[in-house]
Image (cartoon, rainbow, N blue to C red; front, top):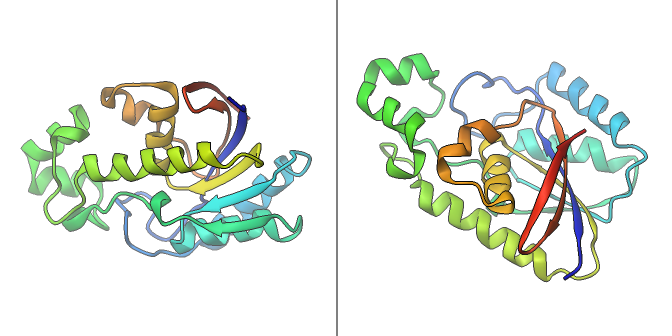
Length: 194
């Protein structure tokens, strides 16, 4: 089984940062563009074969900044979109907890056991992330792969790669504009922050 190195990057700051921003297509702010430029500098010497990115603007703009000067082939991957938060879109956790106290508490304890009103079931979300990884494992030639996505998408990827239970999901959420290197085979891997 060929080992792949995944370089996972969460998008930079957007005007919806601090809220539940899943399917909302928010662009990067000036701060977010600066963060993406800083990430580009940090990974400038890292060999990258290909980049897959979420087509939502905050991630696609980050990917464009990371890939354009290096002429890295960048491909949109709809499976990497953030979970759709339905009626929670654009709200802070405090606002959600005030309107749906029981559901909000259960969400933090077990996201797989909660369906957000009007949102995407966690099982559907984690299923598309799992399928993305399965397809990635079949791509034989690319060994150093840049993935630019969202907090939830990257946490779900890490959950799958490291074999962590859903109860670890929130512990795996990366910070904005963070970088994580993951050495991965289709049957598991190890991770380290950059």
